Length: 310
Image 1 (spheres, helix red, strand yellow):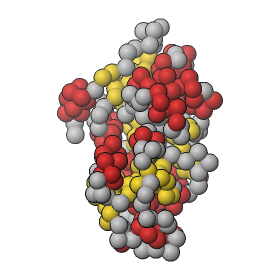
Image 2 (cartoon, rainbow, N blue to C red):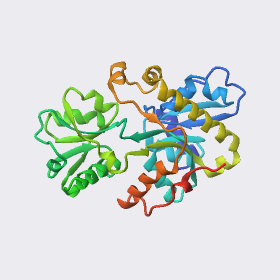
Image 3 (cartoon, rainbow, N blue to C red):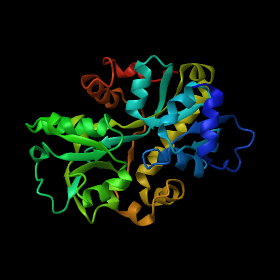
């Protein structure tokens, strides 16, 4: 995808965040990110003036399709993008010249936000009961279904006996209610919206590790090399916004409600994201090794290779 094509796709489906007051005249950084709790630090930094404080004029483009993140950066349609960690690792192993510059949300067993749900009256009680059952998630052949299969295997079952169908998170509740599927792998905020009709069976992401980085911000190696000062400022602003978000979930909910379009009741009940404040190789390595084991990557590699070095 070239730059003009990426800009055309972005321009047709996005709403750009307003430029913060006082940012005019500062060096501009163009970013793209889906509006999620996991990417919340980007929006906190924007609305709280943290980017301006660090000497940046950051504009945010919010696409409906997270798959645009990598091509938008590689084509230079934007400077820095947010996406899930697997997409970053896969792009890197495919030889695309990208590097991570800041972390986003972590998956931590102490604050779990991944859910394998079944209907409240379901006879499914254990991981072994899932064998032969039909489960839904989106997208298929990604971390959700693969982790669930691995989680079943860790409990002595056969993950290949699970049947998967691709259903958007938002439609999984109805699919369970009508009997189309027996359960679903879902993340927030969709899981909380189903709290009255479903129950938790397990946390499949623990098949990877108790704690690992789930998403991050990346750019091209060339852009980082040409703008090391901007990368440093951006990473510092994200770090400050992440620390604020970790300590101020009630206040951050007001910002998320505006950008992510999540209602206040759901935000009040859901497990909120916890943000990493620095990129730690040990929190990157588990997904790299897991992805290589299950053939999402051609081979494993040292996590430090992916991290930008000033």
